[in-house]
Amino acid sequence: MAENFASVMMVVAIVACCISMLMAIIRAGLGKTAFDRLLAVNAVGTVIIIGIALHGFILGRPEFIDISILYAVINFIGTFAVLKLFSTGTLGDGKGRAKANAGIGGGEKK
Amino acid sequence: MLVLAGARKNNMDSLFFILSGISLAIGVVALLIGSLGLLRLPDVYSRIHAVGMIDTAGAGFIILGMLFYAGFSIASVKLAAIGIFLFFTSPIATDAVALVAHQNGVDPTPGTKLSIKPAKGAQKKSNARAAKAKATKAKATKAKAKAKASAKGKSSS
Figure (spheres, each protein chain N blue to C red):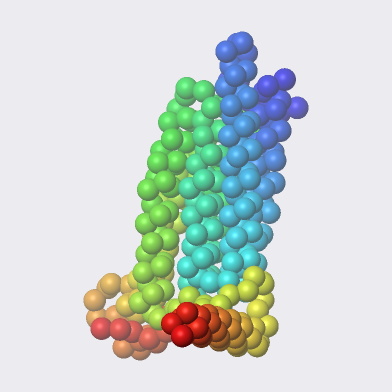
């Protein structure tokens, strides 16, 4: 009985993950500035992490959690990479295209 | 309906299953509220608030629910690792987004109205509304001052 309750709640949670991901994708499409889109993509990543873990539990194969650990790390690093590209115009590889991309995030400030 | 590998059948465990269901429900509510806020709030800085709701409350409670469900196993250790990682890194990421947005000159909208797709004149309208409100306030304060002055004059005369 109690176990059934928890399993049903897991299915409800994965459906909620789908709805939430849909809303975040809509925001990523509508978003006015680049930061809105970045924020929405970050939220999609978080929801996907939860969704993969829930999916593994529902199917009875908790090994899927390894994939969601990887996803968490990649999400974090990716957000910072895109932010660095916006703020400095380069990804930190030295000589770079800093001057060519000066206006990418709405103008550089020194 | 759904059978888990290694699900246990003690009396004590039903308590953990109930706790798991309750925290999953709290997490679902937080997730839906956060994504609705991400869609409906008017501004980068206020949307950051909604994303923080998803990242900490939603993910935290759902992972806590899965932890209760899994019991004490290697899966729960990995889940705890995900939870701790998300709990520490997602506020850092949203803080960096706010910092870079501020550095690039994204201003918070002054008078904001809740709408997914603001109309072209919405901002001007709200600005005008704010100016009107200011003017009426100023009038009111002036009237009060006048009334006070007149009262003073009457009392003195």
